[in-house]
Length: 249
Ligand code: BV8
Image (cartoon, rainbow, N blue to C red; front, side, top):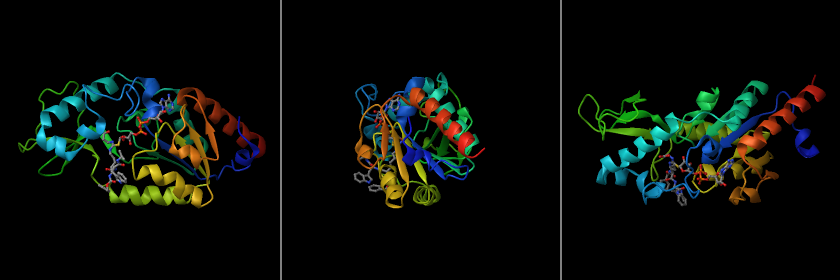
C-alpha cells in the first residue's frame, strides 16, 4: 500500500502528527458536520455552534448538545480510533490533534492529544469560567446552570471564537516540525486547522490523507488513501509496524 518515498521515512524516531475530523467517528455512528447526516432539525452546525445562537436561545443550543451527547454516549471507539491509539504506542514522537469534541480518541487510549475545538463532556460557567466534567445523559435541566446560578455552556470552541492560544501554538509547532502528517476524516474547511497541512508541507513533511472523498487537502497531500478510516487505518498501522520491524529490528 505504501510507496517507497513514505516507507523510507518510517523510523523509530519519526515525528508523526495525526489530525482527525468528524469522519473518523462516522463508523461509530456519530453524525459528521457536512455529510448528509450533518443536519439537526433544519439547522447547520455553523448556525448553532456560535455564541450568538447561545445568547439568542440557550435552550435550543443545549437541546442540540444534549442530542449529540446522547448519540456519543452510546457510541464506541471504532477500528480507526484504535489504530491511532496503536500508533501512539508504536512511535515515541507521536502527537494527535483532533477537531472532534466527542472524546472517542481518549476512550480509545490516546493520551498525547489536543482536543483543539474542546470536548462536549466538559461544561464551563458563563460567569466564573470554571470548567467541570458532566456526563449527565439526558441533562436533567436544559439549559443547565452553575451552582452560582449562571448558565453553563459546553466547553467547546464555537465558530467566531478563537482557539486556546496554548493549544494553537503547540499544535503549530508540532505540525511545522513533523516528518509525517497523517490527516484523517476532515473536509479541510474549518480554519485554522484546515491550513495545518500546508504548514507541514512547506517544511518538508510527507502529507498522507485518508478520506473516501477528495478534499482541498488532497491538493497538498503526497498520497491520498480513498477509503473509510476504520478499514484503511488498521492496514496502514500493520504496514508501519512491519517496516519498523524489518528495517529497524
Ligand atoms: C477562529 C466545536 C479567530 C463546536 C467546531 C477564514 C475564512 C473564512 C472563515 C474563517 C476564516 N478564519 C476563521 C473563520 C471562521 C471559522 C471557519 O473556518 N468557518 C468555516 C466554516 C469557513 N473558523 C472559526 O470560527 C474558528 N475560530 O478562527 O477564531 C477568528 C474568529 C473570527 C473570524 C476570524 C478569525 C473556530 C473554528 C472551530 C469551530 N468549532 N467544533 C462543536 O463541535 O459543537 S468546528 C466543527 O466543525 C468540528 O470540530 C470540525 O472541526 C468541523 C467539522 O469539520 P470536519 O471535522 O472536517 O467534518 P466534516 O463533516 O466537515 O467532514 C467530514 C469528512 O470526513 C468529509 O471529508 C468526509 O468525506 C469524511 N468521511 C466521512 N466518513 C468517513 C470519512 N473519512 C474517513 N472515514 C470515514 N468513515
